[in-house]
Length: 99
Image (cartoon, rainbow, N blue to C red):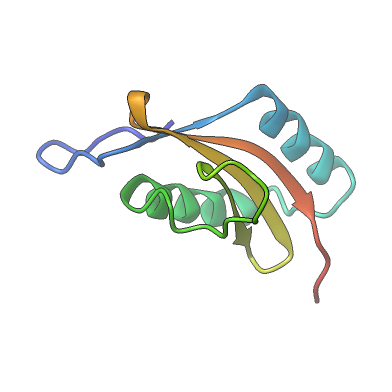
């Protein structure tokens, strides 16, 4: 969860679901995520989504509030937006390959 800076509160709170946490741990165990570098990339994604929750890619046939966004061009983070809560929920992370 992102904490707000006094006088600069993001409009949306970014939260991680239990599924996202499990996926994150799995990718670290598999060696796909560097536990020293990936957290800073994730923090950057969270900061972006806090300001622009609909920034990610929407797939036709899925709910409008369900999106994906790339992390370091080799991972895809699934998330959804809950307007009533003004929150973004990171729901999954999956390895999509890359160099």
